[in-house]
Image (cartoon, rainbow, N blue to C red; front, side, top):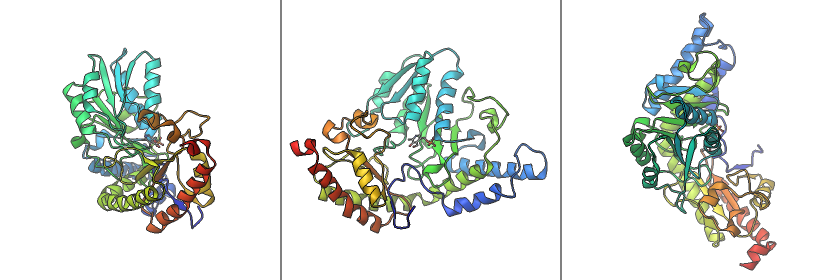
Amino acid sequence: MPTEAVYMDHAATTGVHPEVLEAMLPYLGPQYGNPSSAHQLGQAARRAVSDARERVAQVLNCGPSEIIFTSCGTESINLGIKGIVKAAGGTGHVITTAIEHHAVLHTVEQLEREGHEVSVLPVSSEGILDPEQVRATIRPNTRLISVMYANNEIGTIQPVRAVARIAHEAGIAFHTDSVQAAGALPLDVRDLGVTSLALSGHKFYAPKGVGIMYLREKTKIQTQQQGGGQEHGLRAGTENVPYIVGIAVALERADRRRKAYNAHCVELRDLLLDGLLRALPDSRVNGHRTERLPNNAHLSFRGVEAQAILMGLDLKNIYASSGSACVSASLEPSHVLTAIGVPREYIYGSLRLSVGEATTREHVGRVLSHLPSLVRRLQALSPVAAAS
Ligand code: PLP
């Protein structure tokens, strides 16, 4: 990344923090033992994994036996959802929301293909789920409710405690994709009342390719891959020792810094939003005003295409995202923006700017000095914008 670059895409991924890298390095070098080996090198690796598990359990307020290390958020989600739904044998019913990440939506679609029933609940125009709708959708054969803690595109925070309570009262398992929540929201699993929770290291300054799954003790689960007995027999495969060490340090660090991190992000995010709304008053902010991740700004601009905005910003070394894979008018618009009813003339011109630890006021200033003029230039060329 050029030194003068402005990285506004922390919701996509974060860089590995030096403190995390330092903790990992011995396990990428001389401490390369396999935790299953009985000799000293293996036992040192085993201790590192078990120490990491203790640290993660401490942050999540659970027992170490309830922590399973995985390869990513997607794997944690697949294991949590498929594992719980399939554990009882036969087929059942699953409830989720229309704005989940594809890691959840495509997983429940797969369950549907296998004969399970799935209810996908709508959300409000601000992207919030009504817990009472969950209660009304429960059937005698409902096996699992899966609701994300915070949305990756528009940053809305869902009422997961309320949904977890409803699930608990009905004796149904509750899974939450908390990949975007880590670092910003409390992750005390007892307080949240969840059965299972998924995290991904690369969203909180650990490397890509390592995840965490919390699974409440005694929960019946079907393993999703066969092999050795690692991770309490629930996730076969030799442990990725350096990355497990890294994710534990990163999670502890994120938890320790959460208050300061949130204050830092809110200040810069609001500076960014206020400046953009002042310069482009006919733009819309998507998501909820207050129930949103501190680092998330998501806007739509009338009559323009996100791809053109992203390319224009990239030329200025400003890195942002539309928040979804499909941004062009020739493709399907984002399922999240469709679910919250963003009008057609706005939906393709949607941009996610997500700030992070290293974002500065100067970075925000750089965005404010380029983005409004870029959007106005694109709007001047747009028949949709001109017609309004
Ligand atoms: N869930 C959400 C909300 C995400 O934002 C992401 C990643 O963008 C994932 C799941 C998938 O995580 P991973 O990339 O670790 O598989």
